[in-house]
Image 1 (tube, rainbow, N blue to C red):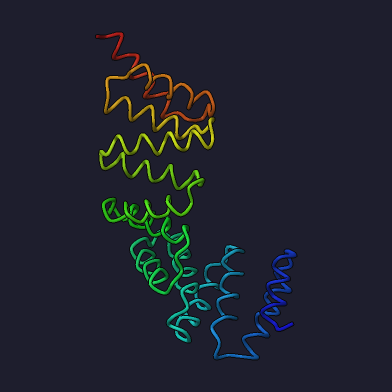
Image 2 (image 1 turned 135 degrees about the vertical axis):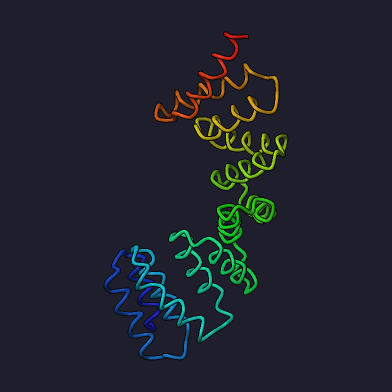
Amino acid sequence: MEYNEIGIAALQEGSYEKAVEAFMKAVEQDPASAVGYINLGNVFASLGDAEKAEPFFQKAITLDEEAGTAFYGLANLYYNKERFEEAAKLYEKALSKGVKEADVYFMLAKSLERSGENKLALPYMQRAAELSQEDIEIHLSFGIILANMELFEEARKEFETVLKLEEDNADAHYNLGFLYAVSTKRKEDALSHLEKAFTIDPDHTQARYIFDMIQLGENQA
């Protein structure tokens, strides 16, 4: 078994020190290969040590410009540092190098969204939802982008999809309630979903606040 395989096996056992040791040996044995550097970057990233992870991903990219997983790993580091515009460019690179899983589309969309680019984020989030049809976080995020763009009917469908997957999802109830409140005259439906949101999650203060505001408005009408 070669060192990268030993390292991966160690990771699966939860032995990070052994994994790092094996990947270091892989790099020493074959310093021209990007694989060991990517593995080291992934280990340190999973341990929350971005400072150690970053140079390994960068080294991998200098060795192999087609190493899509290195671009993806580096993008995740930048996203976590709130360097969203840089992260978006790196996620795009990862996609162009053939890393086309739902997570890459999702994180690219989130990076663009956090950069204030909802319109650019939309097709990537849609693709993520297509690739991972039972992922609650993706559908919820897709619905939020749609709602922010005032595509209310499409947003409603995404929030309802979340509730089909997880009936007691407080955030989906909140967003659906808020959507009904701002885009329809269905105040009872809005109140019902908002109440479910703060019943499921008593700390959901925004749901309770909007619920109270709707009721106050009705009482004053």
